[in-house]
Amino acid sequence: MTEPVVLPVKSVRNPRDLGGYIGFGGHKIKSHRLLRTGNISKIIPKDKNFLLDYGLTKIIDLRSPAECKANPDQKIPGVDHYEFPLSVDDNTGGNGLDMSIDFEHYRHDQYAGFYTMCQRYHDHVSNKFSQNSISQIINLIAATTEGSVLYHCSEGKDRTGLVTVILLYILGVDLETIRQDYLYSNLMLNDYRKVRDEQFKRAGENDKFRANMRILGSVANAYFDTSLITINENYGDIDSYIVKQLGIDEQMQEKIRENYLEK
Image (cartoon, rainbow, N blue to C red; front, side, top):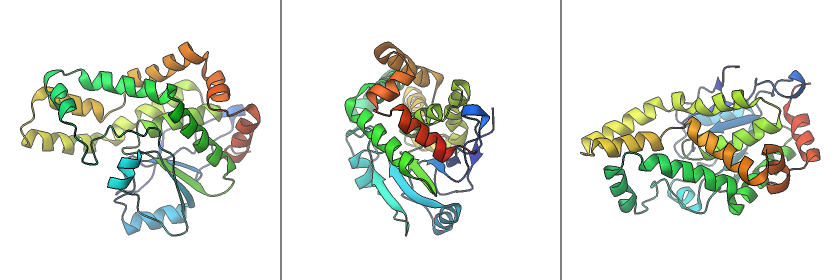
């Protein structure tokens, strides 16, 4: 597998360029075109300037309206900003939402977070709202012929991960490479999970709660497989899902390959 391109952006979690992966016909995905990250609410001027110099023209926010309101993306001059939430609900607890019931489950059942994540992936694949958002995201990306498009959620791993799976598949990247790119978020978020765990420990949270927080702050083969199995069982296969559920026909897919694969 080609090593993921990690961007030197320190104030944004999980910043990567999809460039370099091998797609259809052995053609590489172009660099400086498709960027995936966590949220940019705390981006510093140095990192803004780097992204502008890198070619950034569009930002797509996949977070819920509540998350966007609580921690809005910083505006970057000259960059168009779009919001296409994959869900209207906020499950992150990052906006002051009352998570007390969920937290009690996490303190008593060490597997609660795992089942929550599997359900979340199932819903993002099968929910009509999510499908419509993914379709709009892919259409916007298809229509972008120059510059970098950056898309993100909160930590850049789940919603961003799912959109990346669809994009890389359309571009012809093999599924095992797509899986490894998805799992790479775990390495990228090691420090984030460490700091968060130390905070929970200081707050007196028990081992089961902390185990659940690590689960919620990670990606897993099981979540990736949940998405694939949900697609295969309900829609036939990924190709059918992309065409029939997302409305991305072969002509649109060819347009994406034309725009984002090297000649």
